Length: 260
Image (tube, rainbow, N blue to C red):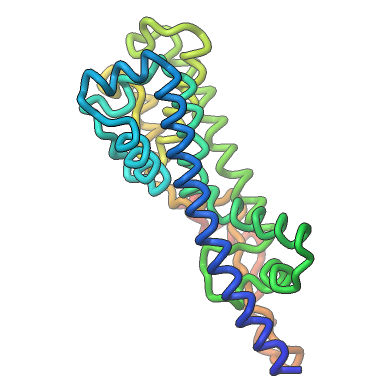
């Protein structure tokens, strides 16, 4: 039985490697293709690259890799500001930001769950039930993944409401219609934590919003409202695992959010 369990664990780790590789390839290739198509079909975006002497493929691949890895590098002097009226491009970049950073564990678990439902392979089921045994720190339990997703969208919602309420009629949004303001604001607040791309001139943003962004930048990518410790499953004979259980109050007291 132990031999079968070890074999299943080995196969699960092997399949996890393929899943992560597939995840990366799909996001990078798919993101590059979508950005290339958008720029090719939208004259205003295509004109920007033409004036700067940039090839569409070069810009698309570079921006996709930078956005997914949250580097914040865009091969234009103005970052994304030059595309602030191209809401479609901003909407293509937002998912890449989240898929590559704050929502990576949640999305990875979702992909594994879908594969388990479709293929019925026991390796995927093992991954979902024994994520802590696989040695991959980005694979969270179901509860932890859900709490992480709720936290990420909660932070985005709070920032979005505050940003729109304070900057809607500001100098930063001059020349934009309501739809462009909404999409631009969403793009800006999604970038505030780690990615660093910007669609508005931060020098004219109100100090209160800048302070909010500073707080967001201090938060680690996997911060959750209710910190969860994924305990490794121990055998019944191991009595020492009981002392690892802690109260929710202790988690909250020593959480990253409480420090801030």
